[in-house]
Amino acid sequence: MSFLTNLINGISLGSVYAIIALGYTMVYGIAKMLNFAHGDVIMVGGYLCYCAMSYLGLHPLVSVLIAVVGCTVLGIVIERLAYKPLRGAPSLAVLITAIGVSYFLQNSALLIMKSDPKVFTSVVDLPPLELFGGQLRIQSVTIVTVLACVAVMVALTFFTQRTKMGKAMRACSEDKAAAQLMGINVDTTISMVFAIGSGLAAIAGVLLCSAYPALMPTTGAMPGIKAFTAAVFGGIGSIPGAALGGILLGIIEIFAKAYIGTELADAIVFGVLIVVLLVRPAGLLGKYVPEKV
Image (tube, rainbow, N blue to C red; front, side, top):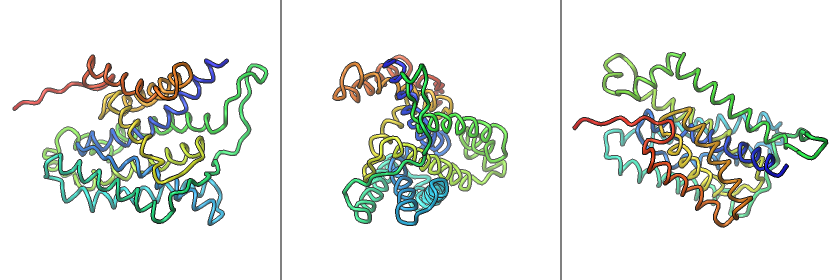
């Protein structure tokens, strides 16, 4: 049963990575930038939910909604203040700005909430599912995390394929100048992408803190890096690739911790990424598009 337990835990952790990676891949696919502050938005979402439950005494579902709305607004503000003025700037300037926003969010949380870990109360309060006569126990937060990943994946696919805004996002991803000539407001479209990505980061932050209750100003740093790795692993810019990369990365990490050692788990995860990129530079589901110069 240990194999099944590790597999389920890997899928659960990978589902969190997948939700975060979807935010990375949407921003990169449309704005062609790497938003390294995305991992810290996860932390902000966790703190918003924690404060709503612990200080205001609100219901967990209401607290999650507050976290999603708060991070959505935060994503729009970050894009308008930090990234929009650099729309035509070199990619290195945007990258440095993203790192600066990341440090700003981390240190702001450190000043406001202090450095001591907060014990996060899980938003999922359901009994575990027992299988095989109680030999296999699946925690309720694990089930909710996987279901949330599937729901987000389906909703995003429908949104990008069937809605007017989703088609505008795909058009901007192909060619911003041509999309603007066709009457699409590129700035509004990019702001919407940041809003959706930040809202997903809040959901991921709440699920992550529910599974691993310690909440601190660096909560989203390592999951953010691993989710970015998952996005590259699956093919950055591809929504199915982000989901596949996240789940595979979670499974690899859990099995590495269980059968090899906790100390080497992260090294193995990044080592697998290097091997995959050597074989398929565009990622598992990514497409190589040659640029004409």
